[in-house]
Structure formats: C-alpha cells, structure tokens
Image (tube, rainbow, N blue to C red; front, top):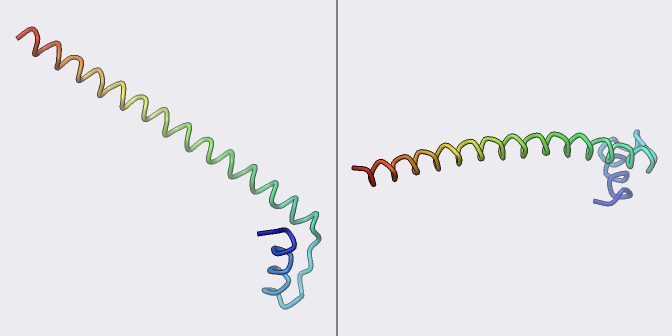
Length: 72
C-alpha cells in the first residue's frame, strides 16, 4: 500500500479525526521494518542453528549405525 493510501485509510477509519503527515508514515514504516527485520533475523538464525544441530546429530547417528553394520 502506498503512503498516500495509508494516510487515506487512517483518515477514513478515524472519521477524518486523525490526519497524519507522510513523514510520520515513513518514520513508522522504517521503525516497523527495522523491528520486524531484527526479529525475523533472530528467528531465522535460531532455526538455522537448530537445523544444523539436528542435521549434525542425525548425520552422526547415521554414520555410527553404518560403521556398526560394517563391523558386525
């Protein structure tokens, strides 16, 4: 949605009582974007770390089982 669209939407849902500037909307967008990006980054980072741990554990188990089968 464009900044003008957001501005119109806010004005409409508040019965023309709230008329914010485009600058305010840009600032809100930037602030929200930064916060979402940081939280998304942390979420993705955590998922990758867990995935690596799980993959390493699964790989290690498979390797051990393969070695065990070869020996016996």
